[in-house]
Image 1 (cartoon, each protein chain N blue to C red):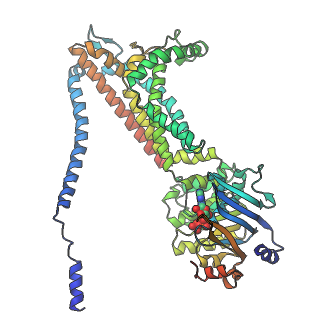
Image 2: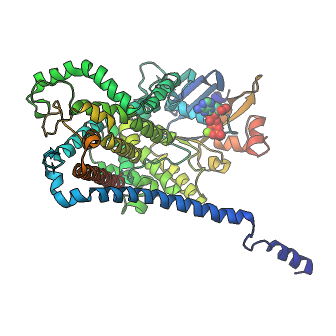
Image 3: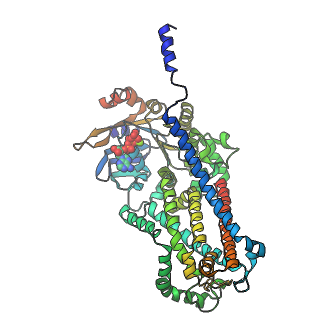
Amino acid sequence: MQSQSMNNTAVDLRRIFEAQNLSVYYGNSIALRDVTLNILEGKITAFIGPSGCGKSTLLRCYNRTNDLIPGAEVKGHLTYRGKQLYDKTVDPVVVRRKIGMVFQQPNPFPKTIYDNVAYGLRVNGMKQNLDEVVEKSLRKAALWDEVKDKLKTLGTSLSGGQQQRLCIARAIAVQPDVILMDEPCSALDPISTMRIEELMKELKQEYTIVIVTHNMQQASRVADYTAFFNAEALDGGKRVGYLVEVDTTDKVFSNPADQRTRDYVSGRFG
Amino acid sequence: MTLAEQSTGYQRSQGLEKRNSTARVLDVGFWGLTLLLAIGAGAVLIWVILQTADSAMPAIRAFGPGFIFGTTWNPVTNVYGVLPQIYGTLITSFIAVALAVPLGIGVAIFLTEGFAPKWVTTPIAFAIELIVAIPSVVLGIWGIFVLIPAIRPFFRFLNANFGWIPIFGGGTPRGNNLLLVGLVLAIMIVPVIISITRSTFEVLPRDMRTGSLALGATRWETILRVLIPAGLSGIISSVMLGLGRALGETMVSAMLVGNANRIDISWLQPGTTITALIASQFGEAGRTQVAALMYAGLVLMILSLVVNILAEVVIRRFQNVE
Ligand SMILES: Nc1ncnc2c1ncn2[C@@H]1O[C@H](COP(=O)(O)OP(=O)(O)OP(=O)(O)O)[C@@H](O)[C@H]1O
Ligand SMILES: [Mg+2]
């Protein structure tokens, strides 16, 4: 039913990701159950919900970084622009080139600022106009002015907020189609957070963004759509995450369809 | 402020004075002890060097720096020089490092980067650590009775087919030679390189790998372009440790190098090393020769020191670049 409302409000918008009854297992315990959810092109979609409800897990499905976790298994149906993402013929390396990711902890490589941004270009053989692309990416990430005189210093020597913007620059340098962000501001101060939020709105012109956040204000400030996830205990005491509802951010925060969502967004949640 | 408040404030500021307890005495005592031990370790090193230099003094006076360039070792006429030994030491250590480094890094990557499940890698890692426990005299005997017969055909093959390359040239190889020593030394130092490189890789953050893979890099690109540069200082220190071991290893060299006092460009011919010279001559050495052997030992210590300093300089360079 939740996808229904999304379909109605967004008939004219392209669906980048379509998940149907998607479940994720780690070893033999289920972490995320039966998610049916669409991600729309050129929009920012926020994932919110209590810790452990599978937000990061779902995010990792989109660029197949779940493949890197031993024992992780994805079941169900997930398409990227109409193509089955978990088809045997799909090369995850190519998928990850098109679908960039920014992590919770800034994770620049122990290389120079320049080499950090150029890294994705180099491994993908996009070696023309390196200087130009590096500058453009740093500008887009609102970092250029702060680092233009020290491109040859280590990326790891920047402040946390600058490092996170460097990671964003690194991700957009390869011109991905989608950018996935897993709590990108959780390690940052309010000012850096604000800059990154502004940046997201900027980037929306060109990219589709999916962001996981624990900060409700952040979701309501930046996201067009918000998906609320929750977790419930199974018989064995293990917890499994599921999607409660997804709708426009306005609707989710002001007039959600589900009581659990209402409790969560109003702060009355467990 | 009421009187009561003042008095609690006063009470809280109590106890800031220096503790006059046993804890403090222990603190100071422990500090003194560690300082003493640290100085002791340095002092022992300096004492050994000075003592060696002192015993070598007659030879140092007699031969001076020319000792390093001399090529004869003649106890009858008491003319001594260690150029062939320096040459053999450097060549065998070079071969050992050249073989052990790629192998060691490769195995360390295999063991840490998820190429095989834990139940495969754990016993392999354990077995490798056990190599360190083999006494070098056992390796020497193994070299003589097992390795030489097994590898001689390979040496002959190299000599027959690639003899035009100077390092494989010369007469038909018999078995004892520089390459053989290099090989066995490589076996000895490879576990050192593996275990240090492995622990270097193990502490690199997981996010660093995922970050690279998430940009569309393959596993190999991630290893070559991110992990190895990030772990470079650890890798280099493992190589330095291994090199130090190869330079100073005695038993293997003495038993396998062939003890021929000559400089041959070919690795397939017998040669000698400083350690092999000392080990083989010391037993029946007269006074002057003992001094010369001490001098040779001093040269070896200085050689190790120079190599270590050079390596340190190289590391500094690399760290500034990366
Ligand atoms: N690498 C992993 N191996 C095994 N189980 C995992 C792994 N990663 C996550 N899980 C499990 O999957 C469930 C969902 O985790 P996930 O990290 O997706 O939650 P989350 O919603 O992102 O939580 P948070 O808000 O705390 O980041 C949890 O129960 C967690 O224990
Ligand atoms: Mg998470």
